[in-house]
Length: 413
Ligand SMILES: Nc1nc2c(ncn2[C@@H]2O[C@H](COP(=O)(O)OP(=O)(O)OP(=O)(O)O)[C@@H](O)[C@H]2O)c(=O)[nH]1
Image (cartoon, rainbow, N blue to C red):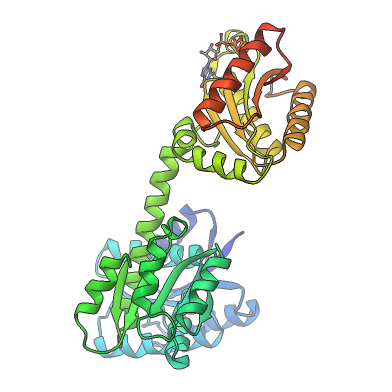
């Protein structure tokens, strides 16, 4: 996907900086106009809606009073003002008109800020936000602010409806809740959510009118990420949401780095022992699920010795991909070295058949430019065990037997 960004700016230096920054992130295509007339013609010929956003200067040679802002907004394009003048009244006027941000060209950080806004818009398209407020007017106001920043917004009229929507829709990542609502108030709702591990990554922002200064502290103590008192400036609203989402995204990145094997992109051994137990117990509780398999590539040392470690790495990466494709519903991990494992939540029969199919398909494939053919040995534990640790032990013993019995085979407990 490519995003076209309209840049309306008469200074060649600023044009070049923006062009450079936008093109560095390969998803953006800058289209530069040097004056109002050129922007008008460009927007008319492109139907306007094809532009993802516009970065505009207020003082153009043929339109010195910010007329370009109205032109861009009327064309339905998200507008960011990048200007040399700081004028507080004008800034407020433009923000009220629907301009996303008013950034002054006072340092090189201004350009970083523009890029941050554009990137945020792009990411927000994939973020679902829930707004809970019993007042239709307040809900609509918050919804409009969020939609300006490209969030997908769903609404709830009271606390109970909000809880039901959060429970049924795991895609909701941002929750903005008023305090005074019928059935369940915002504060109680936050406490309930934070006692449920499922919502640990949900970004929660509390809102309230009134003069209860203890409420913001109560909300944050209960686990809300932030709190805003109504009425608020929409700049403050966006800044707080952006900061909280960025912190959450950073946490998720750190968690991924800790839990994902860099080579194969499968979950790593650490994840298996931290989170696999609950996956295993859940699978066991679903009747006849809970199978566990250890998969080990045969004679992998020979691959390294013959083709070198780089090719060995590529082979591990490709086999990892085959494993995640073969067991999409299961928890698939790289256990270490050339050893992988699968925790299944499907019935024993289905799991066994998938293992047989996987082993057979691996046999027929050629991997890397060197067209390497490999086989694998598999040890399976499908008797219900008390813990994942025990299942690993049983499957490991069976894998050892598979190797001793000639490799390229499956041994079941
Ligand atoms: N390229 C590469 N090699 C690795 C990696 N991790 C482990 N290995 C190699 O994997 C090989 C495993 O060798 P062995 O344990 O003897 O097993 P094998 O050659 O597969 O023989 P069997 O398992 O008995 O069939 C060793 O040469 C390790 O150095 C890795 O991340 N990349």
